[in-house]
Image 1 (cartoon, one colour):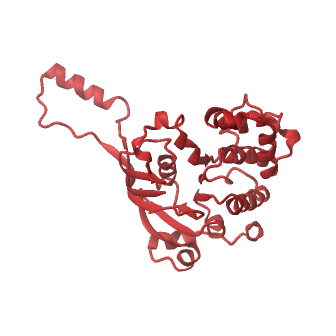
Image 2: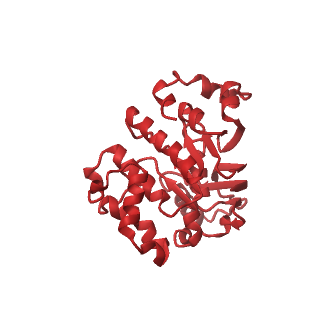
Image 3: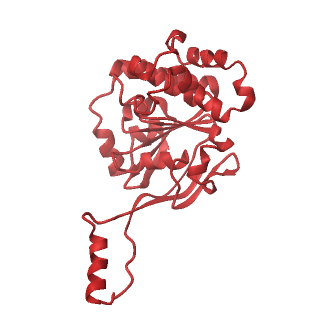
Length: 286
């Protein structure tokens, strides 16, 4: 994937209907506007460019509100960019509207593992149906053949006991729901997974197990990862390169071990110094 000069802006509206009240005042008092107002916007992603190579794991890091989650939703085409380009395998993804991308064959190339496994699963779907849903929607007729065997194979691949496939999300533990979300994401055999804080909602002991699973799947399936996280302990272990974002911009990028050991930017240095300690339980995860 190649991302070039990517921009995302959101309109800023005044609280309490300020814009509407201003228009009403102007109409009633016949006050001619001095000049046309320029719409105010918030630039959440500000002209960022990066590349994700085949089989590579990229860490997208920064404090809350830095724009990393917005960037992840742009490259997975859940949001439309304001400007810039997103190309994957020669396909100009930025030209496909977000509202229609879910039904396009290109959807199978890029999948997302969401932050909260509980919120991202349909409570009316069993684990089987949650994993089968993308295959039924985008897999075509061939994917529907031997669907049961295929879902069981995916469950075994992520370490989910097959006897849990009939259960609904409220009947599963956090780690089991995370495995369902990962199985669903790899069901269409994507080439890129975008992982938005995939372990932050889990207990520490479960985090290590899920991180070990993700590392194994990347090697086994030849996946590329964009790993969105504020946890530099996780990024240091799982990512080949790191992209540091602040206020919507990329402030520093480089090999993970080198950048985190010797950051050149003050902002990155502050992030590294904020790590309370290196978590030994994560060292054993990969």
